[in-house]
Structures are given as C-alpha cells and as structure tokens.
Length: 88
Figure 1 (tube, rainbow, N blue to C red):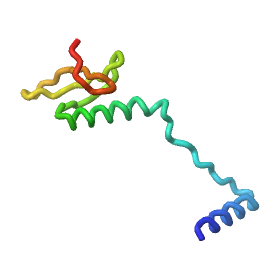
Figure 2 (cartoon, rainbow, N blue to C red; figure 1 turned 90 degrees about the horizontal axis):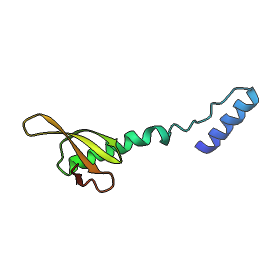
Figure 3 (cartoon, rainbow, N blue to C red; figure 1 turned 90 degrees about the vertical axis):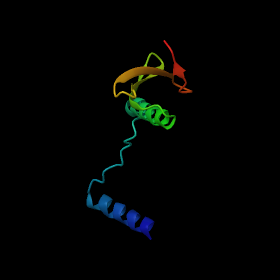
Figure 4 (tube, rainbow, N blue to C red; figure 1 turned 180 degrees about the vertical axis):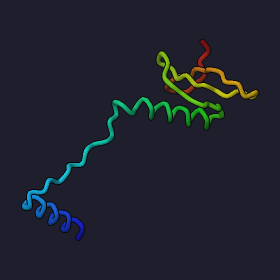
C-alpha cells in the first residue's frame, strides 16, 4: 500500500514537472570517523574505569585527559587498538 502510494506520488510529481529532492548521503566518513572513533575510545576507557574527560589522537595513540582523585587533570596515553596504557 505505502509502496504503491510512493510510486504514484513520484509519477504525479514527474508529470507535473515538480522537482523531487534526492536523498543525500549525510554519512561522510572522511569527516566524522575521527570524532566518532575518539568518542568510542572515551566511552570504552570510562567502562574500564578510566575517568577520561576527553580523548583525541596523538602520534598513533589515544591521548586522554583524565580527572585525578584530587580533581586535577593529567594526560595519559593508550594503545589505539587495545586501549592498554602506554608510558612515554
């Protein structure tokens, strides 16, 4: 029923000369993958008990800004694949 209605609507629009907007692909992986990956890394670190306030990529590692017990922040580095802590 719905499919028939959509086909009929498209046919009417085509004959009436009405432009039907195309559905644009809004998933641009080149722009959003970095941000999405960093957000996922932050969530996974938090699930492991690391109180990361933000995460970004740094020289092939994840750099996390971690809230310490006294409220200060420090930088800690993690492997991008395993999220294992890295000491530099």
